[in-house]
Structures are given as structure tokens and as C-alpha cells.
Length: 384
Image (cartoon, rainbow, N blue to C red; front, side, top):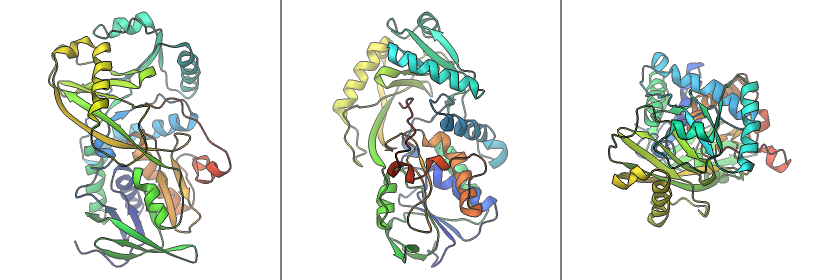
């Protein structure tokens, strides 16, 4: 496709945020929208490399409410967009083995219940009864919510891309943004490897690369790319079909069913910031050893695949929505590892902001860029 010379709205980043925003803008009747993705295929950046988890269990009011709007959109996805996304409500089970985490999670559950998310509080014995394959003798308590689960991330992106295209959005892959022209503190042009586009509105949904994009317009945003990696196993017939998404919270170690095997990941507390998406094989051994300690069955497993992706981390582990100091440059980025699950509602919220000047589905004005300079951070404890 030949790149158009002008656009009313240019969206930079073709993962779930950009794809959802493109669709919801077009659904509202917006015209002359261009979605740019630097990779050859949409959704192959952070979205395509995530674990696919979706959950209601968060520690802040705004994240819980985002889930309450976003996850039902995923449930309705096939009916509304015609794309199957394989939403499996296996539940998230957070296993806790220290008193500090227990104290915080008790408050989290109180908040979740107040907002209508009826998370179960589990004793250590109840966890061990539910997970007889896990070596969880030290677990003291935990939480479980059945409607949490896993979704095929690539299907969500492709569903939004196809629907956006049907509504007239021009979607360009292999189109890397290499510059942004600002004139009089207003956006004027986007330069790409395929050519330049005159525009007065840029939506930055570039995930871990959002800081680089904003810097092209002279805007500094506190988003740090951090590598996270995971691997899958060969089929393990012993894993029950109802095996939940299990998180050993103190180690940021997690397991969930993937086909007939498992997907296993673990956060590296010593990971340095950067854009490296190669697998750190030394840390993978640390991950494997920790996983084997918790699930001895893995001694008979072999690795099927492994990969790494990037979290887009902000200082308070909450996203950034809305305006920047440059007129016409708006943000939807910084989701700190839980962006995929909030992508559906985030795209709709940004369509409201761009077309109406405010967020109507949910008041998220507290998640603005200015909160960092004004010391209005909103800390999220429940980040894996």
C-alpha cells in the first residue's frame, strides 16, 4: 500500500493498544486514520510476546475498574468482531508465603469485594488441596478468582485489525517512525521509512518504544523497557484441564496451561533496562530450577519453545493516558506488564478522548502524564 500524504489521526504502534484504538475510533465514525507498525506483522511486539493472562485481581481501584470494563469486551469479542480469541477462565491463583504479602493481599481482596470482584481467600491447606502437583508446603494463604484466565493475544490483535480495516482504517506494517516534526508546539508531520504523513493528531501506542517516539516530538515520558522471558514445555498429561494460572508471588514465578503442556515464566529482579529481546539462557536456568522446585513433575518435561518480550514500566506501574506538552501528541502506554488485558477498553477510552476531549467510559484523568511531575503516583502492588 502506498503511504498516504495526510491523515487526520496517525496511530503509532500496532499491538493491542493501537489496534483497539484504531477500531474504536473508526467505529465512532472517525475518518482518514492510519495505523503504523514497524514490524512486518501487527501484534508481534510486546503483545505477541506476552503470556496472555487477563485478570480482575489488582490492588488499585482504577486497575480493577479497567479490568471490569475490558475483560467483558474480550468475552464478547467473537460476537462483536467475529474473531475467536480462546478466553479460558481458568482463574488466577496467587500463592503467598510471607506475612507482608498476606497483609497487602487481604486489603486487595477487601477492595476487590467492594467493587464486586468476589475473589476467594484461600488457606495454605486449601491451596495444597487444589494444587496437589505443586510443592507448596510453605504457602500460608492465597487468592483465587475464577473469571481470571488466559486469552490468545494474537487473535485479539488480528480481530481488531481486520475490523478496523473493514471500517476504512489504513493499516501499514513495516512502517517504522523515524521522526516527528513539531511546529509551534503542535504536531505537524510524521516521518516513516515509507514516507512522510502530514497530521495534527498522533496517538502514541508504541509500548516499550513509546519513550523513543515521544522523544522525537521533544516529550520525555517515564517509560522503561524491561525484558521478561518465558518458556513452554512438551505435553504433560498429568496437568489437569482445570489447572489455574498459578503465581508463586514472592518469586514472581508463574505457570499456566499452554496447549497440552505448560507455559512458565519468572521475573528477573536484576534485569537491566533495555530493548534486548533475546533469551538470557543463564536466567532461564534459574527460572527452570525454581519451577522444578515448585513442580517436581517438570523433571520429566522438555522445553518446547522459549522467547523474551518487553514490559513497558512506569514508576507507579500504571499506564499513561492523554495529553502531552505538545498539542496533538497523545499517549496510551506504560501498562507495566498488564497492557494486553486492558487493551480493549484502553483503545475505546482513547477514542473518547480524541473525539470528545474526555474519557466517558471511566474517569482515568488521574493517569495523566503530569502526575509524575506533580507527585500523584498511584502504586500497584500486584505486578508479576
